[in-house]
Length: 383
Image (cartoon, rainbow, N blue to C red):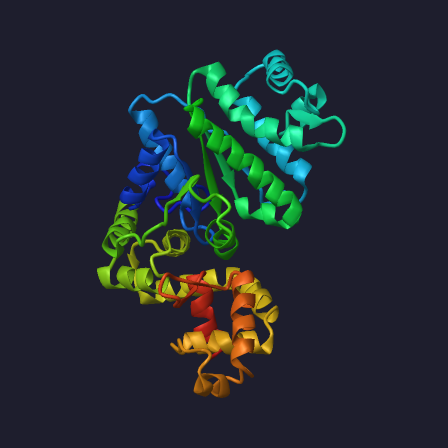
């Protein structure tokens, strides 16, 4: 069923809303052979931004390859290596014979092998023969450059959920980061083959740990923050969507929905799609409230599980944030919310960051990472 409100996949073209500044920045950085990182909460448009920027480049006749992997289920170093190697080899080959030749020529002297059986059954087209070592790791990160040389086209390597590499343990992820950084720096020093990494993550605080606290990729990578999409542009998108189906809704109701979801396009598209399915002509406030109840019903089990995982002190700090408090370590706030001590406040803040409930902006003010969860907490949990 065609719908103007797409929320089940990334969007490009006429369905891509806002983000012109970020889109141009990403494109310009790729043209300058820079590496890029994006870290924003889940479903905030990171992949749509990446794909729109690449779409714009293709529209100008730019030729390149953009192999990509998602590390959401990568819990072992060899899993990561196989995923990345297979995606890269696909950028250099199209037939089994070409795959085999690419692996043997570009990864000679490593444990990587082309596997015909895996090629026909699994996503990975390579396997590791034996235990991978540091030589395999460095060869893997030299591979984008070799492919760029072979094809004569830039290679933009997209890695989603990059922060999941932290789950491999400090020694392992530091080895991976070191090998990546060496490949980035050697390309820059030698003016080597044209390739760039686009590293994306939806666990904001984990990504901040990598790129801001520990500064692992300092001077090797540019961070592109996603700005708030203009609320009027979002409202116009929703109004047009309903109008395309011959339906009518007031501007005030649309603006109220945009405000409730704080401009979060994934939630808004899902919400609007539900409203669309509930109506035949005119959408009134009752329709929107029914849709809100439905979308809350979809997510409330997740919200309850998230909240059940919080300690009493963590819940107290969440309540203080919702009440607009900012001086969490002050005596009056500690006493009012039963936070025990200023030292405990620091521990609780760190715990909420690690659980990706809140983050802190450049002014050190707390920000909820999920606007619908924030609404649910205000409206239902702390009613």
